[in-house]
Image 1: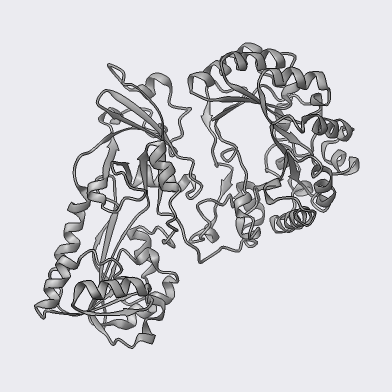
Image 2: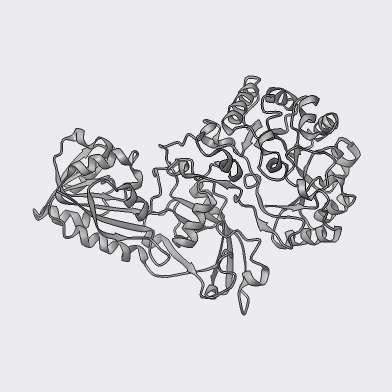
Length: 596
């Protein structure tokens, strides 16, 4: 994992959009940078990347690079590349384990590039690119999209394509520093920028370049259909932490400058999409967004084991080693039997906001005790994790990632007992929507066989329906979906069951109309489903799970509250609601009755 160290903000270019416009006079001391390199080693980072400003301007550059190498880490640079135009400089850095270069180039011609950087540096930048290629480096060429270059991206593609090592990145301008001070003069509309990026990538592909040569950042996925997988940011470059010149310790990389506005609610790409910069949204709103309303999502993610250490004899490991470098949502520390295990998730299926909600508000994190690629018996396979008693009253509680401990009680069976109790009291005509694997056959079967229940099961999978009918020997079974329920002409029912299939509904409003029409006056709608959750796993377990051929089946990860809001306007009265929280499993319940 990489650590990003800002060494100071001076620069030998004068970019219009400069993030650190107000601080270009500020430089960190050589000793402070040395200390931060040492700290990166303490935090188990494998690479230190220096940034600025322009880090290659510092006379201590080689000293820092050599210090990184002595500590057994690789070295990287975020740079304009001008000093790397000199072969002897590059060779010396390569000898100090230079492995990563993130280099800026903002136009494919001298005129366009210099229009953005306000310096005569196109020639040296291109020479640096020639020097860097063929050296086995992880090499990215980054172009910040501003009004002054956004219509001239094709020549940039042509300039970079001859260097097969280089990945060309198109980054939306950040409303920070010069990007904020000159916002109106510099900032293109995201819809225009996305269209130009699509044209540029298509131009490169037409010349035979692979898709892997192009990436983007800061542009909503809904404006770049087909290029969602080409997203690139600090996390996709495996940066775990960063530290500004004025900061004493590292902090996790974060998404605080970005916002997913109301238009993004329910979008299938909400978890991974960068959406809009906050400053852009404040200026232009969200009318350009085109949310993707139908698409599958993951309902779980992995916290993968990174390290195990001895627990302190007294006190908390996190307070001893520092709370700020650890990501509140993405790190997970588990204390058990005198050891503390550190886990981390790099998932792109969930945003930081969603991850924090799952971990801290809902408490839905578990240790995977199974040997399966996907747990299928939660009561046996998963051990709930709860915040340690050491966190109670801690002044750092609200900003710390927290210390967790296993809780060896079967929350799943306990919470499911209420579902089974309700099913055991069913009477009359019952529609079971999404009956699938039939997890409650031991309760439903006796009710049907006794004559108390006239059972009808519906599922979109013909294979599941055939297997279920053959196994049960009771009830009627039909292939169908909630959205097309009326076409089956099944009549009306005293009870409609939506058991662990609510989040599988493709079109909730349409499905609700069909479900409501199927309920008799006074009938009951019982909805049960699961919220998203995190799994603490070994690297082997995580690889096995992520390498599984199973596809995403959920179209949302609604909580009871979110599902209840969706049910508004259907003439249903809430009778019972069980929400998820830190002391429960991830299963929620809604029971409603239909008016006359």
